[in-house]
Each structure stands twice: as C-alpha cells, then as structure tokens.
Image (cartoon, rainbow, N blue to C red):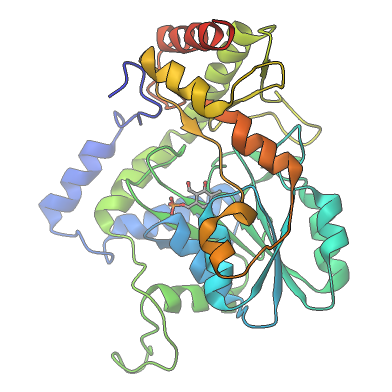
Length: 372
Ligand SMILES: Cc1ncc(COP(=O)(O)O)c(C=O)c1O
C-alpha cells in the first residue's frame, strides 16, 4: 500500500455498534430494519418520497433504465466522460447511447451539446455529476419538460452536494447513488434509487427482487435481478449517513488545503472551487496537467507512486472504450475535452481518513513530480 493511500474510509462512528446489533439479533439479510432506516434516511436527506436500496451503484443504474422501460430505438443522452456503468446500463437495455462532451472547467456534461443532441427518438438524459460539482441541471430539466424526456440523475459521487440549494439526488425522475468505500457515505458495496413516483418506485422494488409477483412468489411476469442490499451493509450506511455533514466539511477542508498548497504551481490545473450553482465538495481532488508539462497523467502517477503517493486516473471516455468500439458503437466520434481530461487528469489521495500532513506530503510530491 502507498504511504499515502488514494482512499481510506472513516468507520469510527456507530458502524461497529450497528453491525453488532445485526449479528446479535440475527438480522443479516435484506429484510432487516437497517435497510428501511437507510432508505428512509436517504429519502429524507434528498427530499424524496421513495428510496430503494440496492447492492451497488451500477445495479441502481441498470434498474433505473429498466424501470423507465428504455429499450431498442430509444435514444439516451449521456456524457462520454463517466464510468462505464452508465453506458453499460443503456447498451444492455438495447437503447442507443448518444454521447456528449464535457465542460473544460467543471468536467461535467456540456448541456449545450445535450440540447443539440435531442431528436424525436430521445427518451432520456442520464445526467452524471462528476468529482464534486453538480451538472447544470436547470437547462436539462427545462429540456426534459419541453420534449417529454425522462431524467436519470447519477448522483453516485455527490452525497450531500446541492445544486442551487436543491439536494443532488432530488432532481431526476429517478436518481441513483453509490455507497462504494470511496464515497461520502459507504456501505462497503451498495447503491440507492430515489424517486417521487409511486409506480416507478414499485417497479424498482420489483426489479431489485427478481420481479416476484406479490400475490404468488416464484411466479414472474418480468425478468428482474437480485440486487438486494443486506442489513449488514445498511447498518454501516446508517452510521455513515449520521455523519454526512461532518464528512462534507472535512472534504471541503481537504480540498481547500490541497488548493492552498498547489496554487501557482506551473503546469497544473486545479479543480474549480465553486460555480454559480454550488461549492465544490471535492469528492476527489482531481488535477489536470496543462500542455506545458512534457508528459501525461500516466507518467505523473508513476512519479507519485515512486514517492509513496496513491493516485487514480480520470475516467476513460466511453467513445474510446474497446468494448464499445468492438460493438460498432461511437465510430469516428471525437470529444476533445474528455479526451484531454482522460490523458492529462488524475486524482490525488482523497479519502476521509486523510490527514493534513498527508495532504501536504501529496501536494509536495506532485510539485516535485511535475517540476523535477
Ligand atoms: C458517476 C458514477 N456512477 C456510477 C458508479 C457505480 O457505482 P458502484 O461502484 O457502486 O457500482 C460510480 C462508481 O464509483 C460513479 O462514479
């Protein structure tokens, strides 16, 4: 392990106590009360009527696409700069993924390109908030209303973030979260779907649980998945959610410290501290090497690893994924902003357990790596 790991979660609240409650009571499956508590807590936090816990964020995206009944001939607009889970859910459904580039300053999907990509076949927009700042949602919500398009909001990285005062996770017809250990709320592995629509919530609950017919178990009119979350996972999540405000403060302080230490370093573009719509929560602290640096992110990450600093590369764009190119998707497409971010961007240690001294060490190592 690196001397400064790229991510280390904080698990020193009620996590242990709640896990012991599960073990002592014997409630370890998805039927325990912590699952309901985590669902209620997330619904309340995001101001939503329904929350449906699932086994990870990728599963939440699959279920969201299925719940909205997207399929062949339907076009879904999404950013090329995202995790493969987004495009995979669309492609597996048989729907057509339509990609857009991202904005150079926020790294989020370019909403002007979304407007230009709408056709009579567009059925949904998958809006993905990336790395700490929210997508500019109001124009997307306007387009959705105007054209009768659904919004799936991927807030996987955005627990506790807001957009013009509204919680991320409150704005999609269906919104999804991930609870992977690098997230601001973790359950080890886990995810959540949120919606205000009773029928959609019912569909999500069915899809998560193999679409058992309520009136006759083991009879199925549709194919679902076993995407259930266990009570053990939810127990950790309830403890994590209790401390979300503190975790956001901590991430912001970490982000500001990195920026203080790195500001003015030649060759490095730092994340935006804020937009008109939000203060960055620095889910991860990403940096981009500018063109004055004679090498790319892979080389910088190697130099940092040699100094004991863990890093992760930025997303690799969907239109450059070998798996999709083999399927004949995204041929001859080019999205220069995402291509540059993928080659020149990476993130520094960003876990909630990171100390100030480790931040200083990582920032110092980055300065040396880029300048040396
Ligand atoms: C934007 C985004 N969406 C979806 C996911 C998938 O979540 P999971 O890793 O829980 O499957 C991630 C994962 O980190 C993500 O960053």
